[in-house]
Length: 70
Image (cartoon, rainbow, N blue to C red; front, side, top):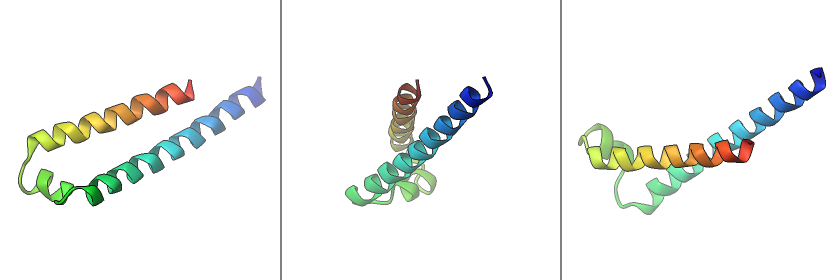
């Protein structure tokens, strides 16, 4: 029983680390592909539509990673 829980914890940590790496990779890819700085548009120019799109990307990545863990 103890090794099963340990194996589950290790695999969850691996998937979480992989998910965070994919998230930052996608975020940097968005920054490179677009002509403008996403961070600047959201924080300084208060572009709510862009923030909603970025939030949708974050949620979809989270759902994909969650499905991969199960």
